[in-house]
Amino acid sequence: MLTRDALRFRDLYIINNLKDDLKPVYIDFFIELYTYKKCKLAYENLSMQIFEFNILITEKVFNELNQACLFYKVKEHYWKKLEHLVVKD
Image (cartoon, rainbow, N blue to C red):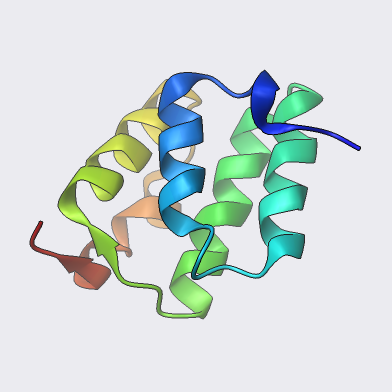
């Protein structure tokens, strides 16, 4: 089974802050895609899951997610629509 050990600190921070709100299957899928160097797809999918399930996220998580999406060249429409789910830290 894949582990979170392969994730970078930022990615691990994001996943750790979402693990209580997302189903484990979505977390595992993110890790699998990420581990196989499909980081862009991993973040596109993660953003869609956050949006679909209306998961509230902190400003810090949103900012980290934003930076990761910019780094992996994820199209803005995936992560920008999550702004309305941000709660103040």
